[in-house]
Amino acid sequence: QVQLVESGGGLVQPGGSLRLSCAASGFTFSNYPMTWYRQAPGKERELVAGISKSGGSTTYADSVKGRFTISRDNAKNTVNLQMNSLKPEDTAVYYCYRPGYWGQGTQVTVSS
Image 1 (cartoon, rainbow, N blue to C red):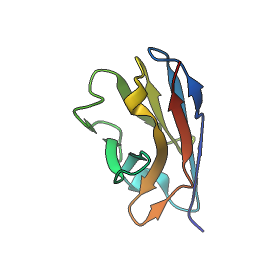
Image 2: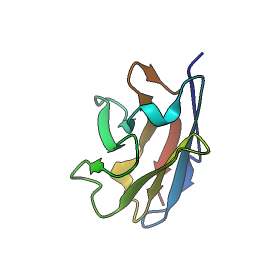
Image 3: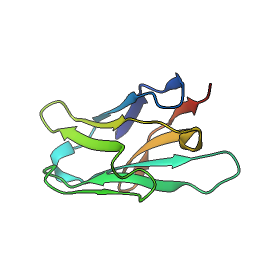
């Protein structure tokens, strides 16, 4: 069955960095675009970044452009989100998404 398992979340100070990873299994990873979403308390889930099947095309929310980088490794069935210059407003649960399936999420907290 399809599984998406996120890791790498945690507590970081403003201006710090984190790298999230999503390990995928149960499907042909290279056949699907992948996306990171996030949901802050009391807010709707929002798209953070997306990447095409080959990794050749990416898209970002305006709020994270220039700070976050999405990448994928089709040989390892992983999609990553490098997050730099983190701000308190980046605090949220981050989810990995393949069309039709969600991971369980990983908490990112940016606070001093």
